[in-house]
Length: 144
Image 1 (cartoon, rainbow, N blue to C red):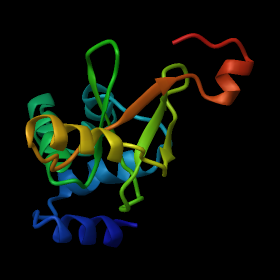
Image 2: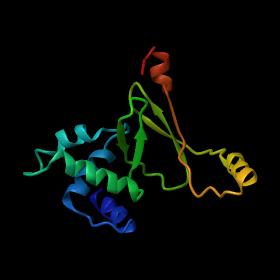
Image 3: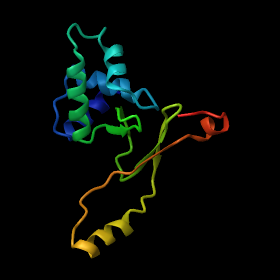
Image 4: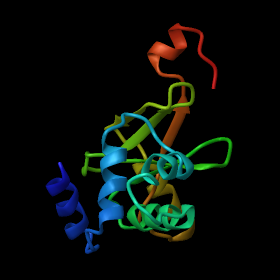
């Protein structure tokens, strides 16, 4: 899988460093989002010198380049998720089990038209994230 991660970094014009590859490997092995602290705790045994600021910096760079996705939690903490889907889509985030699921429909076109009609503006990009409980957590009486 490391070749796929190296290719994703190359496509994003990023250097495939051992730390970036390790972060991608950790995130890719999960169907749930992870915090920088969680990743740091899991990776620090693999690298002699790996500080939490390095993990934060790498995550932000990877997110800014589109290699990984940011999950904005209602608790105001940032989490990160490796999404293989490179098509335009959005995410549903379970606040109980932390699973992230793709949503292929968008429905933002009407809002983009409204921005254009009201103030002559042009929407260049958007992010839509739906938070809630997945079917399993909702049926089990889970809480966020």
